[in-house]
Amino acid sequence: MHLDLFKSLPVNELMLLKRLTLVFFLFYYPINVFPQRPDFTAFPDSSIKIDSIKITGNDVTENYVILRELTFKEGDSVTSKMLDFNRERVFSLGLFNNVQMKAENRNGINYLDIQVDESWYVYPIPFIRFKDKQSSKATYGINFLYKNFRGRDETLRANLSLGYDPAYTLIYNVPVLFNSQNLGLGFMFNYTDFMNKTNSGYRFYGGDFEYKGIQSRIYLNCRINQFNLLVGVAGFEYYEAPSKIFRSITASDERIDRFPMAGLEYFFDSRDLKQYAAEGTYFGLYYFHKGFSVNGINYNVLDTDIREYRNFIFGLTWKGRIKARTLIGENVPLYDYSLLGYDEDIRGNSQITLDGRTIMLFSTELSFPIVKEWDFRIKLPLLPESLTSARLGIQAAVFADAGTAFDDYSGFSYHNFVYGWGFGINFLILPYNGFRIEYAFDQNMKGEIKIASGFSF
Image (cartoon, rainbow, N blue to C red; front, side, top):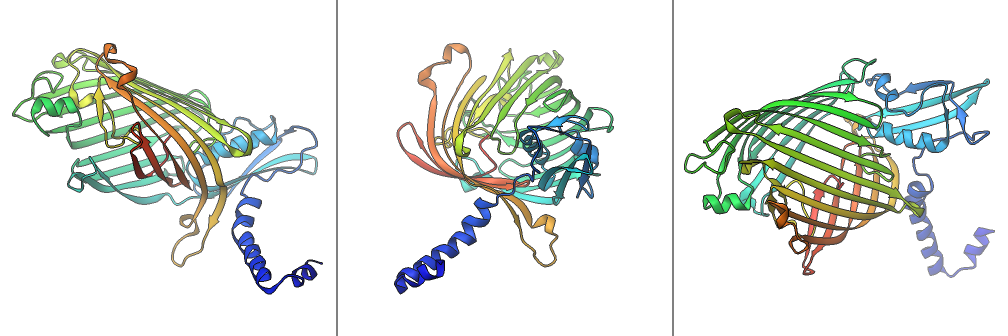
């Protein structure tokens, strides 16, 4: 019948219809009609009791690394919505290219089969970044990352940065010391020659100047449950100012600051897919005390990050963020000042840098999936499939940012805020990373294009 209809069309219209049909099957059909979602066998009721959990595909990863991410255990009842959420939590580990969950009844026993495809765990990541968009102020280098070391979700990271802000960093993190315990351990060592990043320091010194710094830290993690994590931190820091002028740009008013530090970090994270969440809440609170009166240094750092994610109809997602960092105490050094315009910026005003004892950043964003999820696989000679597979997604977004910096609360004013808004496309290449292309406007409707790796929040 369809062929008869086609024959009744003129030749040009028939060729156009055939081409549109081909485009539909090549692009829309595999991406949108069959997105890679969990495979759920129809439950007889609204929930099913899980009698047995079986994990396959984890040739390197230990079973307990996956099981500790689940919000249920054998003997508990689950729904398809719960399995969907837990699938995303397992994927959030960043260890797998694909995660599938299938619950079904076999011979009167309810089985949950969790199938994972392991990612490639060892790879270098080159990078380059520019200060003030100037090629003469480029910092470039390579991040060497070894994920899932020994199959226990351990991470070994080495960073080599050259150019404007050279640095050498080594990080080792062990989320679980023993599989029956919820204690973890981490280490960090960093040596850097970094340029002053504060406007007040530039004015005080009469130009650019350089610090030398060493930071070393040890972390003890206590995972309370799947959503709550408490971290104790202890360390030692060293900063060396230029010999020409050092008073008022260090904490001790001497050329070299040496001091211990300690603190606590608390995280609450109920997001589904942590890399690009559609539902959940993230709350991070950091408190550090630095100096303990050694060499007259005694001040505190308080940092908080609050994010909310809500999913609406047709995949429309809203997310909002409040970020604040403040310094409390006397003789706070310029090298520890709170900054906007570097790791955190205001889109539309990314060329503006703000600094002070306190910064505040507000962001809101609406996103809509163009391609929600596509299990991409390609076979190439000499390359393992774990390296040529990924979970792909494309999201369109509109956003708005606002931020300010001040030294004391008398300087907090609506008029001191810097604003920006715009739209963009986010490309998800998970579990590896992603990148985004954005066009943003400042408060004077001056536009700028931004291409960046990662996601806004």
